[in-house]
Image 1 (tube, rainbow, N blue to C red):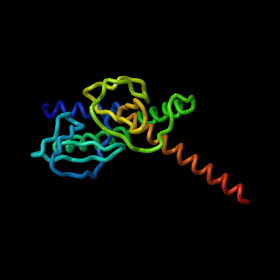
Image 2: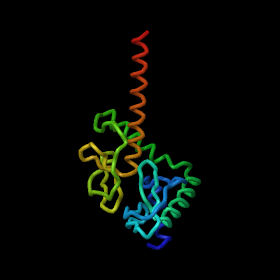
Image 3: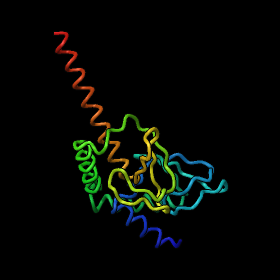
Image 4: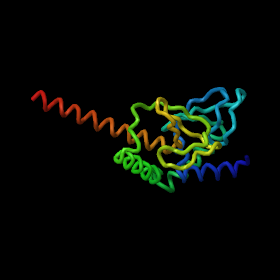
Length: 176
């Protein structure tokens, strides 16, 4: 894919929330055949592979990561920290928690891989085979878009922390 087309794809994915802004720090090493989150091709052992830890762990070629990082910096300068789309998804997750159609995650264990031609359990939109997606471990048929998983995980952590505070307060009251 030409560099200009790759840049445009990264811009579109950042704007839609499908791709999170690239962090400054990554782990690098020899390619291990993971699929690059940016160009969607396997990273060969002869290439440098970046392991990118964000709301989930993904991999990218070194040149692809450079483009992703540059476009992320531009995106964040123009759009602030880019949380508007994520905020809407987090509200969707809270609403679904409230009406019982989605449960809080008990852990943060998941797999990242190619889309499975399934419906996202968070946003109810299709996950196409060409996209990367998350599969939550231990939850039957829980496939989600990367950004949807991020919103679900953040809200689940907030629920667990709230439950822990409530439990601690109840214990304090009971011992008084």
